[in-house]
Amino acid sequence: MKEKNLNQNLKKLNEIVDWFESQEEIDVEIALKKVKEATEILKEAKKRLKKAENEFEEIKKEVDFE
Amino acid sequence: MKEKSESYIKEILSTRVFSVSAYLDLLNTLLQACKTKVVGEISELKRAQSGHVYFSLKDKKDGSVLNCVIWNSVYNLCGVEMKEGLEIIASGEPDIYKPRGEIKFKVASVQLKGEGELKKQYDKLKQKLEYLFVEEKKRLIPQFPCKIGIITSKQGAVINDFLNNLGCYGFEIKMVDSRVEGEEALKDLLLSLKTLKKQKLDVLVIMRGGGSLESFLAFNNEVLVRELARFPVPTIVAVGHDKDVPLLALAADKTVSTPTAAANLLNQSWQRLEWEIKEKEASVFSFLSSFFDKFKLLEYKVKEGLLRVIEGEINDLKTRIERFQSVVLSNDPKRNLALGYSIARKSGRIIRSIKNIDVGDMIDLEVSDGIIKSKVNERKKSKSKS
Image (cartoon, rainbow over all chains, first blue to last red; front, side, top):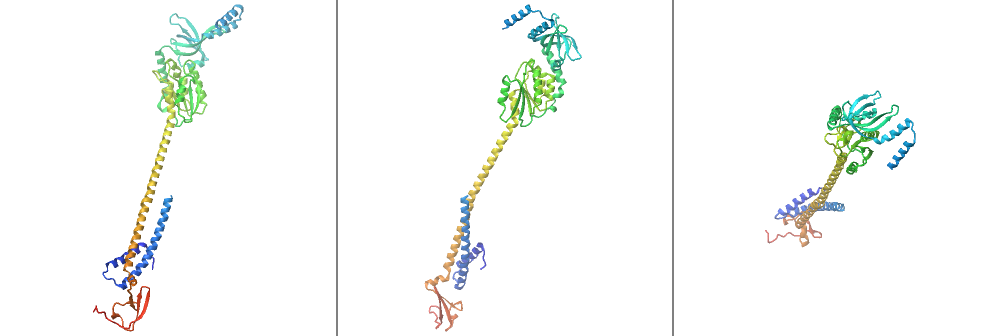
């Protein structure tokens, strides 16, 4: 999967979640596909989030140090 | 003491025979003690080729006559234009001119008798020297003067008043002690100007305290006024005045009334500088402190504001991602596999109905921990559904 930025990923996740929440009956086959896609995006998003958190901690340390 | 010397002279006079010359010498020595001021009317005025002025002073009451001489050099300084009939006060001492045996009053200084005459002389000289007093001739007192030439009397409060009021700005004072009153004042003042003319100065100050009108005479002398006007650096005169401003004060580049005012004038540019420096110092300080305030505010904003915002954003993001995850997880069909459900597929496609398969077909049953490869033996329609 081509790496997308966090915002695009979040948008995509939002769409998937919206889809799940709007279905009265969930088609298993589509659901599986969506879950698979969402899982990959989530993994990517979490990775980005972790990176952002780390960067933020670094900055905070630097600011406090000064 | 006096009696002793008198008796000594008497003894010499009574016991010795003098030559004419020695006797005249003795008389001249004794006459030196008769130094005084004599008032009278000028008559038989003659000026010799040498420039010396010979005249007689006549007593107005009984016509008595005193022969007088003013040497050329003294006359040039005396500031009085001699005329027959003019009443003057001559200061000097008697002297016998040995080659002729004549007694003459040697005049050291002359002043006019009576305020009216003095005033007339003052006005006349003032008019004559007017061109020296014009505003265009005035030089500016230099900014930040250092080397100050002073002409005043060491005695009296003047110099102390001046020095006490002079600020500590590293002034270099060159002072010449000069009499500023009496007959010797003029000569002293001229000599002092001559001395200080050779010095490297930024400004010259001539000072004296108050005094009688008569004592201002030296300050109205033409030669002195001209010397001051010619002085190489700007001049300040602080001599005060009675009715008429002394001509010397008019010729100065700056005139003030007291020594204190003269000191203040010299302080002025330094004080201004001192004040400006203090002001600049304060403004630099306030600039820096406002800069630091701004910096602190910025730092606070970065720490407390910006970082908090970012932290909030990250937390929001985290929450959103967690929510997404939980929604996705809860909707994941595979979650049901753990509960005992399975997903049946034929050639990768989910089997939704018995119509999708035939007996003998190979199908995959996905359960929680793997896939069961199965063969369809029989198709049986549910009872509950049609």
